[in-house]
Image (cartoon, rainbow, N blue to C red):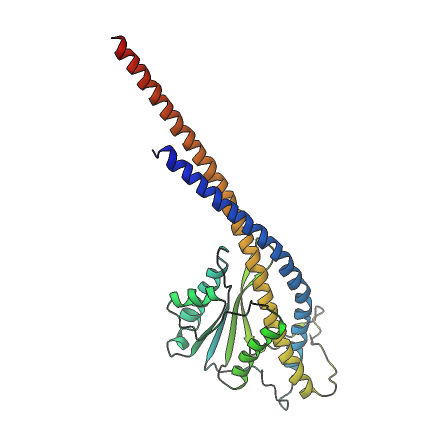
Length: 297
């Protein structure tokens, strides 16, 4: 059994760790509130704009130059993994790395073996995790979270869009954590480009099919040139906001569990300390009694 000094040292160490995890939990909770408000305000706008985007894209006829149209053959694929720059947030980062590895080695294995799959990491932890899996990270964006705003994210989005329109990539997938609540984050694999056409919905009456009919002014070409790129920027910005909110939620949950576990460990160590102290006192009493009996004899 460990001596009393060692147990006291462990108790002090665990208490210090508990204070740190508790403070991190409160900091994450404060940041989560701000990030949660941001994604909740952005999501309805992004979803409606995406609905318009897919509808407009599907309504464009062959005479319209739609640079973001669906391409039949995949020649070069890009996977974008969105993680954080910091750890201590449970499986937040590792889940993205795992899913990206699955896409690289399984889903797109035929292309990756030919060197036709590039991987871009948003966040330091993603870059480190992917490299440890043996995946070459083509490019990393590690400073995106420093003073993050729509303008800085749009610059990165423009990089992806330019790569697609210039034929460098034919298919772009984005892997990120979608925020649901503080305790739950949904891992999402989303096709960023090409733009998916709107699915034709059947009318419940069974009389035919229904598609949204838009009136284009000034022209379909000008609408396509403006609304599609802007919608893509919004969609990627929403993914970043989702990831940020998910990170704070995951870290708050992880630090809450760590604080609770530290409390359990402290109670166990105190019980162990009391037992060791009781044993030491009993041994001292036995020594005193044995010494007294020896002198008496």
